[in-house]
Length: 616
Image (cartoon, rainbow, N blue to C red):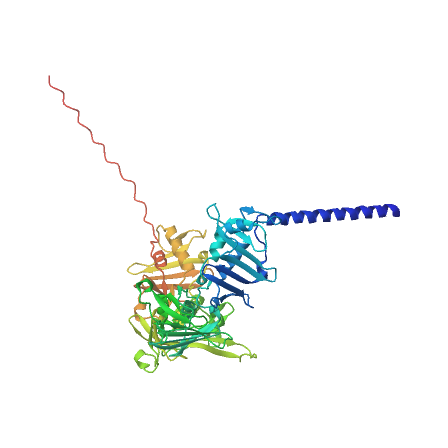
């Protein structure tokens, strides 16, 4: 390509670029003008750090502190309501005029401004900060209802606008004050003390959990203490009484309650004093109060007085134990006079440690022990001193359970072996309650006695619930003996699909027989009861069966219990287990089918006599 052509193309490209740049800048300016069309003022709220409001009530000065929070500097010193200030900014930013009077060139005459109430305006709003100050002068109501005159101090023109912004800045200083009692972050409160005529109460939070320190040391209820802190810190102020620190006449010289709240890193607490109730009927549902971080006395809702009556037991943790299940690797259960049962976590499952071996157990039962202990709620704090243990059967408890963690190797944090986390003792049972004590705590409590049944102390009770696990087709012969009836022996026919009598003749009920076999092959226990008792020696149903390969088995149903669960014994397991009612019903079905009755013999025909001839 020739040099002349190259230079020509470069000139054309440059011209095109300049045109696009010029055109876009014009378009941008047009868009900005369109966006500003109809607006009275334009500013960036982030650059504003002070606001001055003048109205008929006086002058209000607000200032943004180093943390970005707004505070009232005059006529009182206090926190400003963040939402009120934000709404003020929004209303000013979106302030549009309905009509303009005059313009920047010609302006509005003084007499006309005077008629509009804009010469000696009693209501003014001024924004100060990094940018040029913006001041709005508000005048009289316009002829159109709901409209008012306004004039930017730096403008020659006046405008007709809606009354919303003027009404916002015409309020009293109390309307700009933050009505939340304190600015505390309740999550950061880590110490609380309450002093009242009822006594002194002290609470501390460590590692995200609350503890009672006075008048006793005990685990605290995190939820209830959190609610108590929130109730005090975020109480809504109903009325600002005055801006002096005087406590006379409000019952604050000798307050009914003093509550101190400490936060992380603070040297001084925020102190709340609760005083008397107003004498006039108008405020009878309110209470005088004073908080150390604010000037003056305030009226709070009377509900704040519930803090005065707080008792230690109201804030105690009613969970019997506080433990994270993920760190529990061992469950040790010791029944009075019985061998110790050790349940160990193995991967995502549980096993029983017995004689150096791992025995399979009912995993759901182990999980239930852990869940029930964690969910167990104290029904009563019986005694704060664990001295009279025999009275509650806790000197020789009926059950002792220990939850532990386990490390297989030494680490920098822990040594190898078992490390107890919590131990709980269970004593006497009275009125469906069992007395209990956490070994590291000096208290005696009561809980529902159902927890004792979960803590099975017989090794037989921990067996897996699966009694038989066969394929029904693998059962080739059965003999069923029922109380008061002769035995019935059945075997599979050669086709292995039907059953026949092993001895004698008859018709087998194929459906009932197969139902019995199916139930037997996949039999599961409802629960394991324990060792057999003398009454278990006379079964009501005995079923002997033969398997493919000539292995044999035997099941005996012995008794029925009040909860509609039968007790049974399987020769392949130790102990007695509970069998569900549907399973027992399947074993009670009739295995024979009565032959169909012969067809009925028709009755002999009877000759009907001919009617006698009629007489003439």
